[in-house]
Image (cartoon, rainbow, N blue to C red; front, side, top):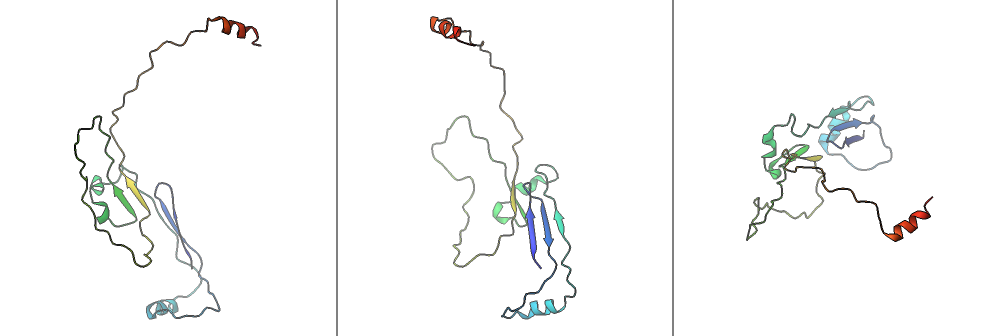
Length: 155
């Protein structure tokens, strides 16, 4: 059968499976454990579909999941901390990293398909921007001679 994994914009997932089918004319050998599993299958119905809703950010998700270092997280959804608001004044004289560096391994062969489907980032909850109406008066109508001349030809 074919396994089809669909991921929505908000991280929700639906896994669908096709009915089982056979392909003739193929050559090759399955490993013993897969061969034993294939022989135990009867019928053509595939597994039933599954659905998994993504948790709402900030609602129903424990705040502690955002504190776990990103590289140590497992599962289909990873959680990143809220980005910090930019400062109003730069006072630093020397840049320093916010987080420790991580170990990097260069791939020398093809890597397996990643199991992570999305990253949820905590939303900012503080609004420090204040709005107010623009207090300048509206521009007045032109009073120069050229505008008076052009206004004569307006229909």
